[in-house]
Length: 193
Image 1 (cartoon, rainbow, N blue to C red):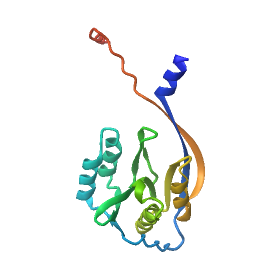
Image 2 (cartoon, rainbow, N blue to C red):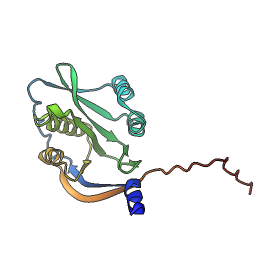
Image 3 (tube, rainbow, N blue to C red):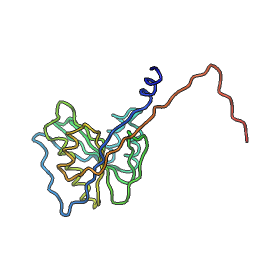
Image 4 (cartoon, one colour):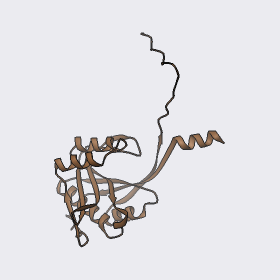
């Protein structure tokens, strides 16, 4: 029984929906954000400052790729305070469930890391963030958009579908945690070949 618990604790499985939105034949009109909500695309310096203020060791890989490849960050502000945020990536995107970055085909964008504060959910902020990112992608001439949603996250899935995303697959990301071994003595030095 201990072996089963050990393995369960060392491996994490993420069941996810993969979604795609081909380019809209004509520019879709962006739904206005809810009353009292302002959507702002952050400039390069604001993105850097935002990531440095919020990132911890587990987030840094994702934000490093976002900053290196000039991903767009959109902030939802209520009374000047951040109510939510979302990113759209180009060229390369780091996927935390996978634990590595992926390369995107030319003309492809990836919507990721959307968040709305719990007390402000179910007010249309998440849908407005999706709409703003879709409009930004269409303005850049991207041919298709991709995203992923954890199975069971119905509000996010609904927001993406409202903006033209279709489910194209379901996958399971399996990630093993790093195991550390402690010894009393130093590890043996490798011999030269």
